[in-house]
Length: 452
Image (cartoon, rainbow, N blue to C red):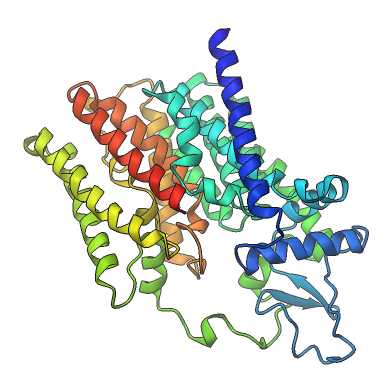
């Protein structure tokens, strides 16, 4: 009973800390980027129109009847001669009610709620698989990942991450207990996530593949996932169809089907230049500034350090403390250079902002794993790898100015869990070494998020 009370107190404390930081970040009504500013604009427009439409007013319409010079850069469609912004509807809609009642105090509510729910699901996944230091997962899921940054901004990324993690937890609990009801809950969470961010469509598919790998002969669980997903997706699609005329909504339909897109925009992304795929993939993974020796050296040290850590755990003859410590030192030097850069620059990329990446991907063989938790490990690992691989292959943009990789935010808590799981397995033959390795990489990650 005391242990349960303590974890509830931790939930409350985490919520209070995040809400205080979120209010400090948003109360001035100065926003991180155009994307977050557009969400505040949508909130005000919903209130002004008394929640009758998601269309936004163009005050200079009488000066620009041809709508050739709107102030919304390239983030809008024209439907029935009205402007609709390329954002998901649920965060602005729900926040608009809170903003009406409690003013600026209502702005951080949903991003903070998303961050807390992400952390709780990550912690519960750790408890389910009996990883060591599971209590750390609650705080690390926020303060050792970019979930911290996005919990403080008026953005929908943490809501998507929360849906993703509860979907994973629902499936993992169903696999462990055999209860299909838990898998239905996971499917519902995945379906609700489709209304928060378009990249959740990729995540839902990756999760389905992960379930097939982790429980290949348990078709009851597969049907439960589909049933739960459909039950949540249909209302999301119906609401978006009623609100904006397309079931996929304004954050997805214009990009996939050119829904309502003007033939040209007064302002084009990146001055109309096409961004090469290599640049998009690079920015999603790692930060290397053009003609900058410091970021190149930092990236090189991080890659070499990660390579050594993975090989030291995977190759028996390399499985020595000196190699693991060497990888940790090289990673520390690389992330030290990135920390120096972070005082003046935003750092994009998963590897750039998540030092535990190498430990997360040190694959555990069946012989070294626990039979009871092996399917859950497979579920998380396969889902993470499929999600990352498909996003790198098909996603059309890298997200502009950002901290970490915002389109890949659901990946971070998955990798965090995997890192703790791997550390738990390898702590048996290498107890002190794994504690040092996990603690060192976790410290680097904490420092990076605080600098962000």
